[in-house]
Length: 276
View 1 (tube, rainbow, N blue to C red):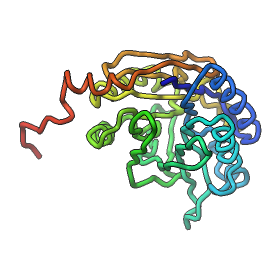
View 2 (cartoon, one colour; view 1 turned 90 degrees about the vertical axis):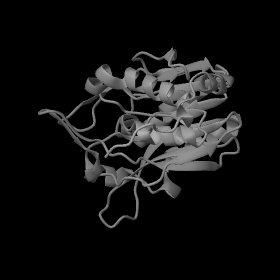
View 3 (cartoon, helix red, strand yellow; view 1 turned 90 degrees about the horizontal axis):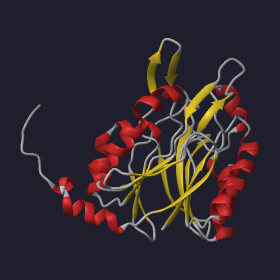
View 4 (spheres, rainbow, N blue to C red; view 1 turned 120 degrees about the horizontal axis):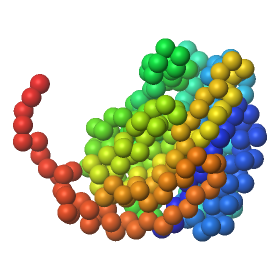
């Protein structure tokens, strides 16, 4: 199968972001992509919660979701919207960080709400509290595609290997890890964690990412790492997009999943130890 990863540099204007995303989507299709994936927060990247309440929409009214469903239907291909920031009916006003798998008819085949919130203190000057604006999901998602089963995750989930082991044991042939990884943590951990998740599960990792400098408020600029990647079940880097926005395409052979798991059957091994 031929996979297309869109590497984006979104701002806080959903309409402008959609225009750019559709153009890169068309580029990926022109390169022969049968399955196109976008990064986390494809529609809007902002830390200003009051601003977000003004521009974000609930799922049924979100224009990015509608636009990419139309793109899937127009081109007759599968699409993974890495995630959208969406308004919810939660009493505390928090948003959802939600991923969508779209089929070639433009229908929503699966949804996944990010489970693990990015609540970290990278340094005194770099503090994130995702849970202040977003409410976490509570269920993992394994979705069927024509090529194999897809485990749907988002960004910070990457640091929780037990989620990926469960998805692998449930039959995931591919793991989607769309992200807006910070430049600081990305330089240190992005590649090694993606390769680890692929090796541990014997699955392909498909990881479209945000890249570059994002002026998310008047006072703050977020720098994301880029380097959208495809990693094989053996841990080999099939594609590394570097740091420029664009549509990046590569071929993968899902037969490698069964072959790799047969060589190293760690997913089916029972623990040989007891502990706390």
